[in-house]
Length: 282
Image 1 (cartoon, rainbow, N blue to C red):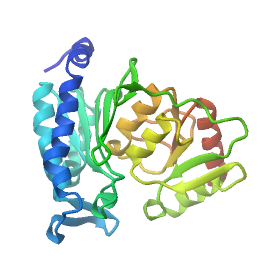
Image 2: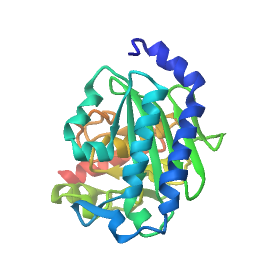
Image 3: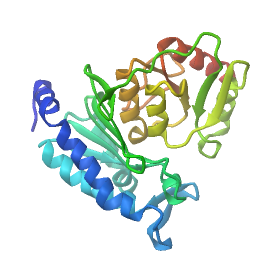
Image 4: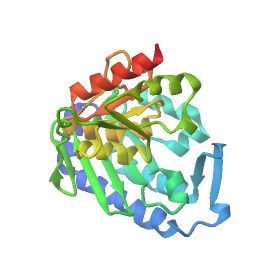
């Protein structure tokens, strides 16, 4: 069992390339061979017709669970598909052990429809603090890595989110209407105002990457599942961005957030978006 954060820091100094290799291998062996080749029996519904899971999701998560656990002895894995099978495993986010947070195919709906806009998300956290993340878009062969305090990079090139140009219309990716309650839809209506251009989001992980690259100004999401947000939240932070909930506090991967919340290119944009969401929610 790892007892000290310094030990994890040492791991991150020397083993991030091993995590990268594991993420790439999971995609190469379990995801990409099924891309645009899925048979009907390889696709299932979970909570409904918009909540899909495929054999690629399951097998990639199994691969990463095995490999990541071996890379960091004493760590545990919280994966989307494992939590679906046993919701109690989500509680590991509150424990003392280092936690790998895994979304094997973020954007499963896109994956099923043959759209390249999907990615694999892996983050490492302890005591609710995000320490590192990997965002890999295998159909585009793009890999973004963030390590707390050490910045964010896309394919080895430093990422800087920057700030929107003064007076520019803000582009904001929002929770898709299929995944929002009536109250959340009302809050998101606050973004339908002059100077803001909201649109439904695609893969959450790729939207976070777009914010970190300065290609998207902000997100506005209404759900908390850690596997969707952990990797991207750290990526945006380390690129110089910010994230806030409706109460003005940073988003917590352990839950209990006031929703919707935003991740944005800078703190001023985050405050602006949460202010508009609060007005819509009023």
